[in-house]
Length: 476
Image (cartoon, rainbow, N blue to C red; front, side, top):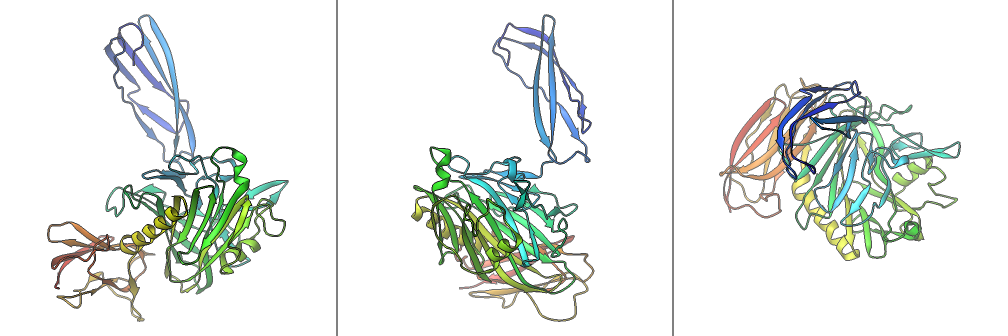
């Protein structure tokens, strides 16, 4: 925008001292620009694949004309290990190190925290905690005190080629992210591969929560027993004064598997959406001398929090945090378990409960469906999609597919249903699966949980390079 006198032959030059970027066509000439007139100049910048994670790069644009000269500076972060989710009333951050809210929790950096509608930031720290005993904990939460300061664990590393990114196709919600992590940075790894996915919708009644789906694969080389997986959140709710977070209240709704924290009429919560295991929940007074986390969070305390079922369920008028976890799981090498959580906000308790119910419905109807691995010792030799049975069907039918032993690791499998007009009706599966034979059941309902009308439908599988579609008939 030109705020001054008309100018002609205005030359713009972009530069950067960083070796991580290469600016192409670094000069743009604007023939003429009148007073209060505006225009756009575009520069193409290539970022090196070897750029350090979270490198902040400064750029300078010089502006020169016959009797005018000025500079404008700006900066961007490249190769970030975090992504901000902000498609609905919740704004938060997912990361590549197992943290939520901030990639660097200790300095509240590389992330946005957690905002609900017009609130201030309500979250100090969020993190994954996993383990199968007190000596084998893999997590991204705070650790012990060292030299009077809290340490922060970073046991998870990104699996090569599986960096954090937003999906741009085959979405089942409005905004989705995915990253694959492995607990290779700890001295006592469990041997797990964690696929973290986020799902968010922008329209009511699904605009007050975000869903996180964790697919945990056993890569330990042995049967994994007594495994628990959970999330830790240190909330700081306040409306007017920053010290109000010392007057937060934590609670638990057993029927909804919901842990929550409130201040006044403002509520946040975490709900365990999966019901295939027991739940562990612990509300924590951060300053407690017996089980607090401001003086450090030991592996023994973490194990107790994620594995000891329902523990402390209510704390009033304190600086609080909480842990919510699923388990125990016992699964063989190469097998996976799926665990779902909803991160929620609410304007009052009833609003929070309604949002939890909406998140559970979305999880059950669109995010996860019943896909069972069939027993048997012989692994398939080829990809295949079988004809559904029964066909025609009412009210439900089963669809079998095979993933061959020739795949390395796991295959990304997507099984979807379309109507005769080519419209997406239901996503039955969209996650990684190991070699084996599987069976999915479709109950004849669409992604909103509404019974689909009678007619012809198509089911399509995409697994690596394998794509196949078959036809089925729903009769009432």
